[in-house]
Image (tube, rainbow, N blue to C red):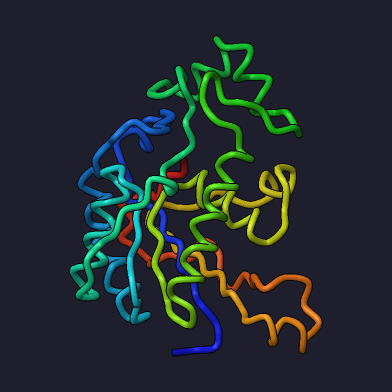
Length: 223
């Protein structure tokens, strides 16, 4: 065990909706063929980190990615509803390009510097708060360990930003997360934080890291 707790955030593999530029939100889309290959590839890398537990969003695309990691690491997968993707309400399943042209509410929201409710769904703040709550619970339960959290692009990017003390504006300055990328945030013990004069116990160690894939693999960004 280390004196730090390491959280490794993994975004799910590619889906057909990622390729088509559609908002998935909470729609339960499976991995496509490329996504399954991505999951098998990244699983080998994540398993070498010797995780103590794997926790995933209940949506199939995240769950199947987590199970690939679990098979390599010899661990089962726990599910946590709080890791689910942002709820985009009636925008779910629609192409972002179409929404920009045809839905004034969406078109205004995506360029707004202020957080907003996605149709009849969630705000970014609501997503960030629940991801932070998961991370706090993980640190309390697995202090000193390495925990893998498998979830979704928007939820993870927002959650990481919130952990680091950022706000909605800061989260929009962060690049999107590629399919099957991983990011690492360490949580330091209180005595270490005080001794080093840190303002927060959370330290960003890596962001949007990936395994080189063959040229036919398109790491699509999206939700």
